[in-house]
Length: 377
Ligand SMILES: *[C@@H]1O[C@H](CO)[C@@H](O)[C@H](O)[C@H]1NC(C)=O
Ligand SMILES: *[C@@H]1O[C@H](CO)[C@@H](O)[C@H](O)[C@H]1NC(C)=O
Ligand SMILES: *[C@@H]1O[C@H](CO)[C@@H](O)[C@H](O)[C@H]1NC(C)=O
Ligand SMILES: *[C@@H]1O[C@H](CO)[C@@H](O)[C@H](O)[C@H]1NC(C)=O
Ligand SMILES: *[C@@H]1O[C@H](CO)[C@@H](O)[C@H](O)[C@H]1NC(C)=O
Ligand SMILES: *[C@@H]1O[C@H](CO)[C@@H](O)[C@H](O)[C@H]1NC(C)=O
Ligand SMILES: *[C@@H]1O[C@H](CO)[C@@H](O)[C@H](O)[C@H]1NC(C)=O
Ligand SMILES: *[C@@H]1O[C@H](CO)[C@@H](O)[C@H](O)[C@H]1NC(C)=O
Image: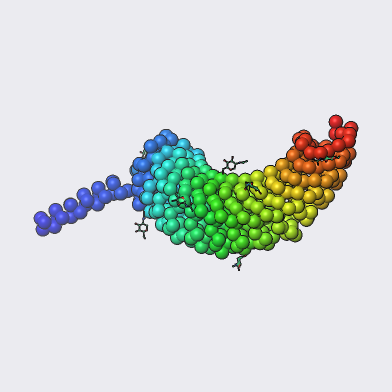
């Protein structure tokens, strides 16, 4: 009898201490373990993450579902520095992680791959280093992967593009190398592919034309080579195509039949040759056409006068010849017209005087002649 009482007492004290230490649920404990790795944390967070709570559901940056599972972890712009620990993997119901615009460093924890309900992972604008862990492929519900503006390196894992609903892929301004994975469009859901400012080499894969929902393809400031895949013609929903500052060659093999939403086309700082396709005039939404610093030749097509929203036209530093087409005077939205350093000849058309929004005009280093139209002066 005495033994049993003791035993009960022991049990009681044990469970009481359990309550004191583990009053906070596992997810709260995991969050506190994450916090301990941070060297700089704002006061609102340090004081607001209260160990006496039973759940972290009222903590700064945390949202839970009705069962008190943490579903959103958002500490964007909290000036936190330190590492992101593997304890993040204990938050199994997380759908949103937004730790963007802090000062996190170190590797991306492999344990992120355990947050299998994740839909949005935004770690942009930090100082993360190392590679994207291969087990990110386990994030089968991921729709947005936002890792831009870090110091990540290595190749972009092909396995990412086996995630069925991946729509937004922002990996720009890192140190990724290797090629653009050729399976990038296998799932066909990618809408925004922003890989600019890395060290990507190789060609733009022909399979890019399978990304039928693609709205933005931003690959500028890389080391891409080769010709443009003709399959780009299939991308009916494209709004932004920016391939500036690579080493792309060949002609511009696009028929511009499916370009009704295209607002930006930038192929500048490459080695494109051949003529400017007159079909660009079909792109009714075109706002910026930037083809400068290439080897383009032939005439400026009169059809460039057709897109009514065109506000930036830069064809400088090419080998364009012939006259400036008077039709350019129809681009009433034109603010910037730069035809510098070509081999254009003849008189500046009076029609350019109709460009009432023009605030930058550069025609020098050509072979223009005749009087400068009074209306421009
Ligand atoms: C933490 O919660 C306990 C109990 O609810 C409360 O007494 C205490 O003041 C809280 N601490 C902070 C820093 O808010
Ligand atoms: C995180 O919070 C910030 C500020 O409240 C908000 O602007 C941002 O959209 C949130 N992130 C996500 C992914 O919901
Ligand atoms: C992640 O899952 C793996 C396999 O299920 C497991 O071994 C590992 O401990 C988990 N890590 C975390 C931090 O939960
Ligand atoms: C990419 O960079 C890594 C180092 O981050 C290097 O080991 C690898 O060889 C590079 N791969 C290519 C294709 O350049
Ligand atoms: C993807 O594109 C390639 C090359 O353009 C083509 O051969 C392939 O059949 C396409 N795959 C799908 C699934 O559409
Ligand atoms: C081209 O990209 C490189 C980095 O890839 C950058 O250093 C350089 O300034 C860029 N050049 C132009 C003209 O934008
Ligand atoms: C472009 O081609 C010319 C010769 O055709 C070559 O000299 C130059 O290096 C090339 N530039 C780039 C950026 O590839
Ligand atoms: C410039 O035009 C004149 C005739 O207007 C022609 O004689 C000359 O060869 C041209 N120069 C160049 C570099 O095309």
